[in-house]
Length: 261
Image: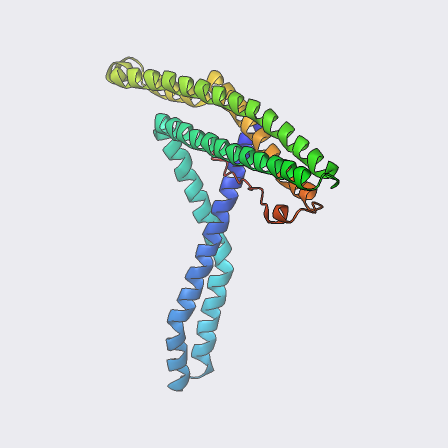
């Protein structure tokens, strides 16, 4: 769950930066639009009073900008929470789609790494054949470490696939519960209006669903860490390689945007 909170916090931070950049752009646009007025005021001889008034207005706007940006950020966060509460099933389905895409991205990255390992192994074998006296112990050790990473993360990928299937199953259960509740919503509201709100709250805080989400987040966090570690250690290993073809080898870096879970 902490991983999910970190992911959500990162997403909110990115939105905060985007809002502030937008506010800065709007400020520059306002200054650009008022530049002709400033020039006209000076040219018309209205004096420093008008210029000072415009400068004061700009100063006030700049000082008020952080407060306005904060209010906008709070409003966006409020709208996001409201949207998730109003459409809980759509939120879960979108989460499922994003997780499935992320799983596919990891799979593609591992396939690419596996192909590169095979190519490196073949390069070492060819070099041994052409120059039996060439010492290739460092390169062979690098390949062993990469193969260990590859095999370990194939297992992690399978575990992530199982976690995704469990998550999909939980989402389908919630879809059924939500659709069933909507079918009897009129009756439920007539009997007890609080029942609808209670059902919605249960959908959003269901422990079984959160448990599956936590496991899925953990598996993907481990995959992400391993990908980054592999990218760093493998580059260090091949930096000392003396074979010219390996100088051009690039190990793909894999970047993940944890979706607000």
